Length: 249
Image 1 (cartoon, rainbow, N blue to C red):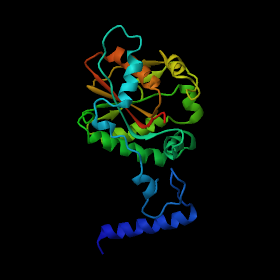
Image 2 (tube, rainbow, N blue to C red):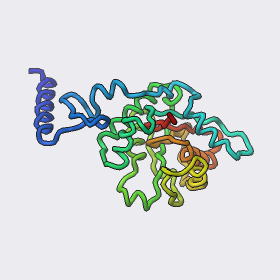
Image 3 (cartoon, rainbow, N blue to C red):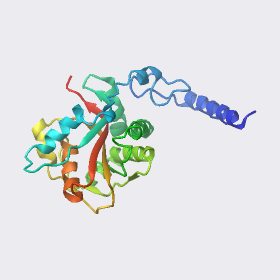
Image 4 (cartoon, rainbow, N blue to C red):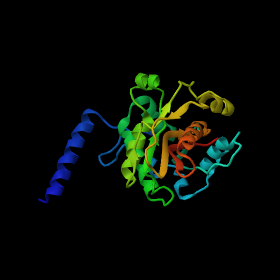
């Protein structure tokens, strides 16, 4: 027997046994996964509402973030490209994907979708030259409380798919603990994260990619952008990528 087939047979058998002891479920619909499905069932994966924003220099996400960046600026700043893997709104079951990583410690799901995001970026000429991946940081007290930073988990997977890119979770720090953004207004979110980030060190790079789990109003990404732009200047491109882009409908 071909050794590769033997390995596949053993792996399949091991998974079948593991599924009997601890059944795996789809992160979106909760249905029990069958042998060849990973993290999400075939039906939910087929219906994943992809944005394809990575193919567009200007899109609803980049326009939303840049509107926040430009608010109150007195001087021109380079346009920030931005993209997300998929859409969701308050009624969408796909909101469970980032929630599973952020609140339920489903790290395997997060890594799986992080790799999907990375592959989408790697296939785009707009992002293929990224050489530094920077996750949006948590305040150190919140990271200790949660035990991990979901953006860092995603960023590691994205960096792994981008040739020549490296992850650096130390470049950007959250200098003060901010309130949870969930129930704040658009203006409240902007005020909440204003001047909340600072840059530590300045590694050599040409294209920085900010990574987070979700883009809602764009306030957090805009605040991170301001800190990075102030430190790195206009010669370094700064872009952003998230798993999800929240729509209003």
